[in-house]
Length: 232
Image (cartoon, rainbow, N blue to C red; front, side, top):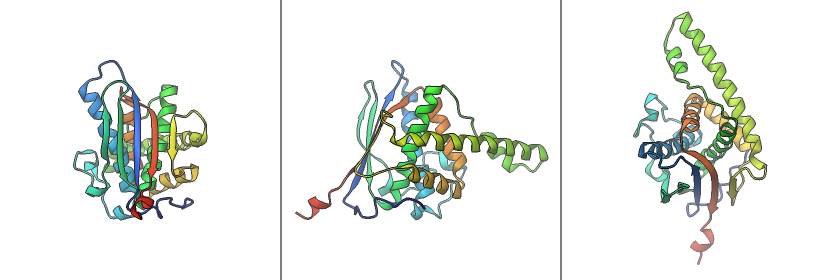
């Protein structure tokens, strides 16, 4: 790992607030709103399962995309602080600033930068469903499909890393306070996701968010330390 985890010294009294605003069509459907919230939570939880040492033994199966398909402990789930349904939609969530949470937050930041670039370019991610199907088949044709799909996934990973280089650019609508997420953190995030063989799932989530009618327009991640308060 190239990154020193900034949450190693924060203690259990510290929290992180994640606030996201969106761009959405007039009168979005309830299905569109709920799908966006679900996929944003999915982005965090798959990232957490893939990078937190606590979950190293957790199995990321085909059930990962189901409502209860991710074995995240209760204390590690995102908690809603506020939810505004007027335009622009805005949701604020909080979580404990513990060591295992850092790289999942780096993944959210990287995904935001990547999707922002995708929105601007109007490009689409390729669904990785064929990748899973091909890997389960033993015929030469299916193996060939797997290689092609894997090549697409590798290209998308390179695009994700390239977009992540805009982390420190001004006016990228991403704000991180109280700690730092840099290029090294994003490199470590993708390395961990690949090690856990969760890359295809991560790409799939990006695909869902990119195709959604509700799109992230602003992301703020802020560390709030209460260590000083606890000493009073």
